[in-house]
Amino acid sequence: MIIQSQNLKTILYEQTFMVVYRILKQKGPVPWLTENVDCSNNILIENLQYAGITYSFIIGQGHNYFTGLFGPIPFKHKNYRCLIYSGYLKSQNNGFNKKEYVLISFFLPAEIISLLINYNSIEKSFEKFVNMIKDIEYLSKMKLLQLRLNIIQNFTQNMDFT
Image (tube, rainbow, N blue to C red):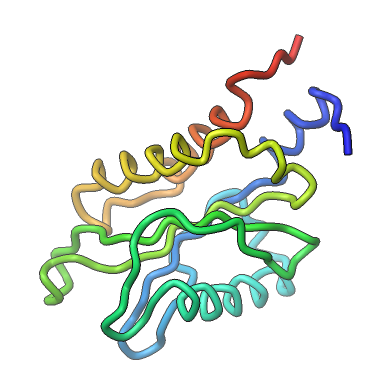
């Protein structure tokens, strides 16, 4: 499928979104922080909750937590895919080595997944993001937006939008 550059730009900036899942002892994975998500869309929210359970099962639970970038993994909503970076964020509230296991997820339409050129560069964007967070409580929508824009730059770095 050929996507015109202006359409691609619109898709990347308007149709991608981020979700951070926290793995809580009592509830398991829950969508904790979102960016560019329509929270009034109950079907999307339900799908995100289900995805958190599925993704945490695939990537790690119990004593086997895997870290790094995984995906693209299918997402039920509107034929999307998800890139998931799993890792540990510092946490003053957690007694588990003062770190908390999270899934930082970038959702995008399946039609543009073939444009994923530099997987390693995207993984480095996630790693840099995780390392700059001093405590999970300081994570914000604005910081997620910055990460999403950085990932989008990885998609578009070799494209001419003129």
